[in-house]
Length: 336
Image (cartoon, rainbow, N blue to C red; front, side):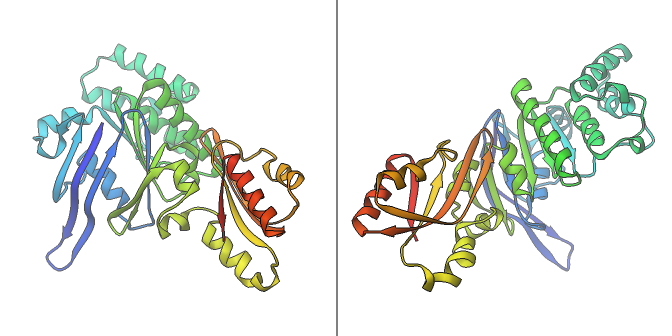
C-alpha cells in the first residue's frame, strides 16, 4: 500500500543544516494500523507529512499503490490527496465555521452539490456520534468532540489512507480510548490503512498492528506490537515499554542480589496465556518454591502480554524440570 525508499529530509536555512530524516525505508500494508513512535524531535511528524507531501522530501521515493508520490505534478498530487485523510493534534478546525461547514469544506472544494453534501455530512456525523452538534461551533465542543469532527472531515472524500499526526496527544485517557476505538472501527468497516504517529506507547499498544520506532531521524526498529512488547530489540524500544526487563533487573534484582538464594527467571507470556495458572500448576507438579519479585500484564489488541520475574528455590534438577514445564506450556523463560 505505502512503500518508502531511502527517504531523507534536510532543512537548510543557509546557516544551519538539520537532517530531519535519514534514509528511511518502510512498507505499510493495506488495511493495517501502523504506528510510528518516537520522542519529540525524532522526525516522526516530518515523516508522516512527507507521505502526502505536505513536506517535500529531499531524497528518496514514496509509493502509494505503486504510484511514485514524489514525482507527481501539482494537479496529480491534489488528486492523490483526495485519497489521503489527515487528522492533527490540535484538530485544525475553522473556529468561525460550524461543524457542518467544517466537514463540508473538502466536499465544496470537490464541487459536490448541496444535496450531496448534506447527505454525506448526515452520514458522517451519525457515524462519529455527533449528529446533534451539526450547528455547533468548535468553541462549544469538548476536545474529543472536536477530534471526532476532524475525523469526519478527514473521511469526507472516502479516502483510502488516514494519517494521524499525534491525533490523541491533546486528549485525556478516557477520550483517547474512545478515539482509538473509533479509528479501529473505521479500519475494519471501511478497510482504511491508518498511519498513526505518537509518543505514547499506550496508544501503540491499544490499536496498532505493527510499529516503527524512530530516533534522530532514523528507523531503528520495526516489529509487530506483540513482538515489540515480548522482545524489544533496541534501548529506545525498551525505554518506551513500562516495567522493562532491564528496568526490573536494575530496580528489583541488582539492589537485592545478595539476598537471593535461588534462580532468578523472567517469564514472558505472549500466546494468550497470561491469565492461565501455569506457575501455580508448576509449583504443584515440582518440588520448587516460587517467590514473585515483579510482573505486569499489558493488553495488546485482543491479547494479554505478560511478564513475571520469579526467584525459584529448590534442587537444581527440580528447577530445570520446572523451567522445561513452563516452556512446554508456551511460556518464554529467561534465566537472569
